[in-house]
Every structure is written in C-alpha cells, then in structure tokens.
Image (cartoon, rainbow, N blue to C red; front, side):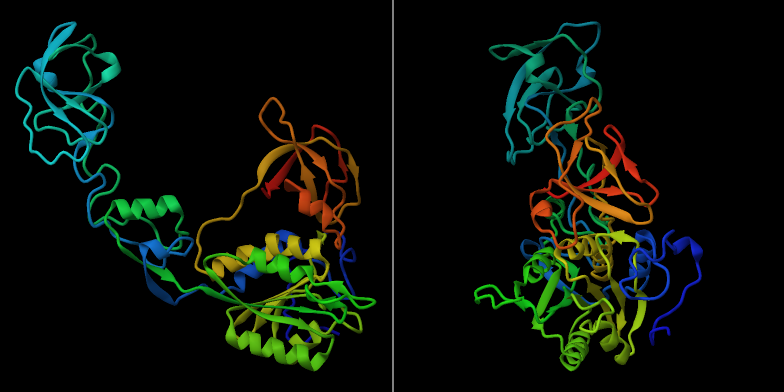
Length: 431
C-alpha cells in the first residue's frame, strides 16, 4: 500500500540498480543520490523576505538585492608600485634616460600636483598620480643620484598605474544577489562606499531528535540509553550566519508527541530537520505522523551508504528532512542532500560543490548498487599534486570515530566494486 501523500515517479533514470539495498522496510525502488538531491531542491521555496543590515553586521548573510557602487574603485588614478611617475612623451631614443625629480607623493597626499615636462615625481604605492603622468617606473629599475634618476627601459603607457574605476565604477552593481557575504566581498562593498546591504532574512530551521534511548549531555545514562550526539552534530552543521535554529529537543517514541511537534515546527519554521524514527519499524513514528499531517513526500529511499533511511518532503509550507538516527548516516545525508536544499531555501545561488580530485592509496572490494561515502585521511600527494587517500574504514552508520578524525570523505560511485591503489577518486575535504 502506498503511503498517503507520497507522489510516485516513473523516471527510470532516477532509480538505483538495486532497489532492495536500502529499503529499510519501505516499499518501492531507491533513488540515486543525485536524483534525491534534485527532488529535495525541487521542493524548495527560495527565500523572499529580506532586511537591511549595516555592512559590519552582514558577514555570512545572503544578498537579497545587488548593491550599487557609490564611488569608483579605486576613486582616483594612483600608483601600483613604489617608484617614479613620468611622462612618456619626454622620452625618445634607445636610452638610458634621465629626468629630474621635482616632487614626492605618498598615499593620502591631497595636493593637486602637475608633472611638468622633463621631470619625474617620486611616488609610493597608493599615491595619487600627478597630472600629466602616464607611467610609473619601479624604484628597483631606477638609479638615483641626488635629484636625478636614470633608467634604461621605456615603460609602456599606463605601466604600474591603477586607473580610477578600473575595478568598479560608480553606479555599477558590485555583487549579484544570492551571494554569501564573505570577508573579501564585504571589503569590495566597503571600497565602493556601500554602508548598508539588503540581505535575505535568516532561514528558520526547526530541529528535533526522536528515540526513547536518547539522553542529553549532563545527565546520567540509564541502562539502554545513549547520549544524543546527533543534536550536537546537526546544530553545529546548521551553525551558519544565515540560519536560525529552534531546537525542540528529544521526543520520545510517542506518535502523538511526534505528530504535534512536527505540526508546530512546520508552522514556525521554513525547514524542519529530524533525526531518527524514519524507518518502518514499530517504534518508528515519523512516517505515520507525516502521513497524518498530509505531507507531500518526495523521497523515501536513497541508494546511499551510509544513509538509510531518509525522508524528504513538505509539511504545509515547510521543507522536511527526516534523517537517519545513526550519526554517520545523519552526517552524510545532511551534507550531501539536505545542505544544498537548505542553501537554496536561504536564497543562496552559489554552488556548494567542493569535491577535489584525489587517488586511492587503499584497496576495497564491495557490492554495487549504492553510492558510498568513505572517511579518509592523507599525508602525501602524487606527482600531480593529488592527495593519496587512506581509508579509515567503511564508515558504518553508527560510527563516530572514523569521521571525527577524517581529513575528508571519498565517494565511490554505485557501479564501482573494486578500489585499487592509484585509482582516481573524488574527495570532499572536511578540514
């Protein structure tokens, strides 16, 4: 029987080769990781609300509108080097050339200086170019005796000069909307005189864990209990300047409590993230609660290791991610599927693909059918500069040790069954 609210899709390109590998009690075939990510992205409603912020409070926020430069960058013609400003029209023949130094110009000099024929002005980096000058010779290429400089090469027009507005011109857009405001981007805005930006409001994310076995830090473990490591991990993974997290804590395996919390969280947030309880066992109540809340579920199974089971959909106006309860599986499904969707929901338009080429330094034989993510480390590189990866194990769903010390996560595609040393492999750095 299909779950109420579940949309069925018939695109065979989305179905993994081995439909029963990550069933976790759910019927139907498993989606590929890419297909699940696309489904999650398609379910997103990008952020529309915005707010103004002063530049000094905007680090890590998402631009909602493209700022306009209030001044040229740089605002005036200036020297890119310590050296001497000259007029090229004063020079002819093969050289060497000689000119008389008549002035000294440092950064911040406010005088209006005119460079007269057959003269030069000593100028320092950032100093305003004197009127009439059209090149700057590096001081290392000049020989000076008192007020006379001698140099051998005729500089080309504009050499070592930064022209006004060559970076950005007044009235031009400086950055496109949807970009994260990094330190260097804030510097660009400041350089063009922008004092305030309009950013997307923070993405509201509700977070909770389910399971009678979970115990919060600071309390004594009872028999059969474990500490709620997922809460700490997921809060840390959500610790972005563009995210506001509301933590609903640990929910017992009680259908009514789970359903009421899902309803409340979906009303109060843009995204709801849960961990645990998304399988189909007698004590897994997330799917039943979603069904009773008329959720539209887009993903129920994904051909990923670790990562079964995983549920993605919408509850009312909120995007919902039901992550596995096992920590490594929760980390992988969040980073590979949930995080790109959250970035889109927050209004971010930039890709978050940070995979780099590497080579295997280990051997691994496995079954086909699922894309697998393996914790790895490296301390050497090959002749092409690629990291030579060493495996830290298969990355069992419940394991925290390997991922905690890993330098990165290597990806093994579904059809690859034998990894040998020297084989090209992609890795996502973690540190």
